[in-house]
Length: 306
Image (cartoon, rainbow, N blue to C red; front, side, top):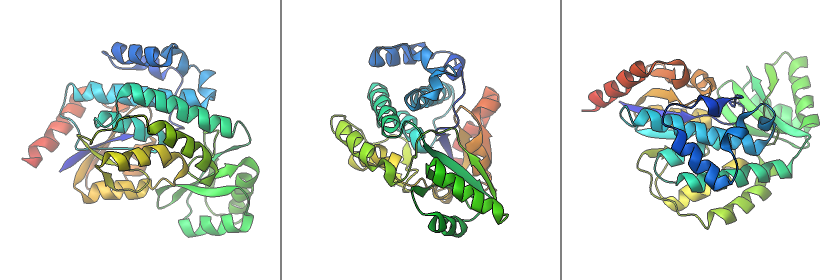
């Protein structure tokens, strides 16, 4: 039996999230301040979180801080995976990407995405509908709207212009097909609309050294493990423009023996998605669980592997 640390994507952000980091996070925040040449703690205000760049930096720093805090006290996970921006803290925790490099790249990633689509675009979750139905709705509407996330068998996220997404939602409602919810994401991620920013980020990645992960890294795009640093470079640089196959990622983890899914703060959205896959395992959000319980769960997985 194995364990997985899962890192959330945009939409999970919360005001004040960097002010609630675990003890021992001061050095991490100081490194982020030095790298950015700005105060990291100013990124998590409600106003600041209107910026894609600030959201992504906050999720990176929170993910790394909480994962490091737990690993310092308990056994490390066997696998890491991240949804969208969550791939970056996953890569840092896996030892494949240095924190300072991740901070610089994520700051650029967020700025590129926001600059490309400052308004009029975003993402919408369609729940209670299957992939075939969503594909049919998109074909009817046409225009700038694409499948972005395959979160579960009955939750698909679309990305594109506000107008096109609203039309898809209206057609779904008129047929009594599922529920549409606009996400707290202001850019059309994981679709061809971000091919340009992804290409710019790829150039920046060429100047960064990546290492072979010490913890198995599962790609949220391909739903497969990545060990080669060059493949990991491509995965991280281009995941903003590639469909997220989160349901496939969870299934891969389960098929490889993962039975403990721990969602790294903030939030618990990924835990809800994971319970549909880990029927024979344990799904827990770190934010809502006592440390001694988390420690016991991780040690139990280690004991079962012996």
